[in-house]
Length: 262
Image (cartoon, rainbow, N blue to C red):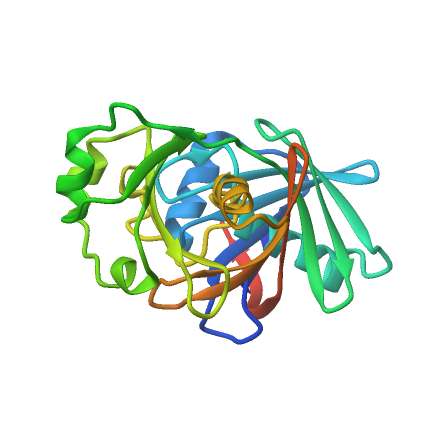
């Protein structure tokens, strides 16, 4: 079996930055364990699997350990692959997902725009005591949404210097953890950790901005914002809150194209 395989760096305009995702193009769905093994072989934070069905694609995402319910950077990578190689005449593509419903990606001048659900943040009145211990610092506040704890700090320097205890963060499963603060370059900055899903620190996380953008939109009093993720690789997103949806924009670059032989 020979499977077309693309490696794409998402949320960046330069190779070796942003978040690398693998995109595998299938002619039919194979069993879940096979998909997980392919994702483990790719050893990236996410592998997107596409199957064409009519005028749209079915889309699923796997980390090296398991399937995930929503993934932004691999969706951006999948849209980029469709526009650049699979169906270059298209300006918009729709993906049908198992848990996130229909997700759209469109060409928007120099950026790719994704239409994702928004998740309203809820303040944690009794946050887990292990969270502050795992982070090694006490945040100003903690809120939660979409199985994510978000710890808010005072400035981007505070979150850049954190070195969380990943073994303690695993104990918060099924919750992942984001840390965020006002940014000195963009509007807000963040980092994201999901070690129980096989992703110790994600370089740039589109899906968590479905939580962060609604929070910062209220706090900053604006609907459109520039967000930066302050991982070692780093990346940039532009977020717009539109009712119960979040428009996530970014760029992508191809780093590898080949064939997976099984």
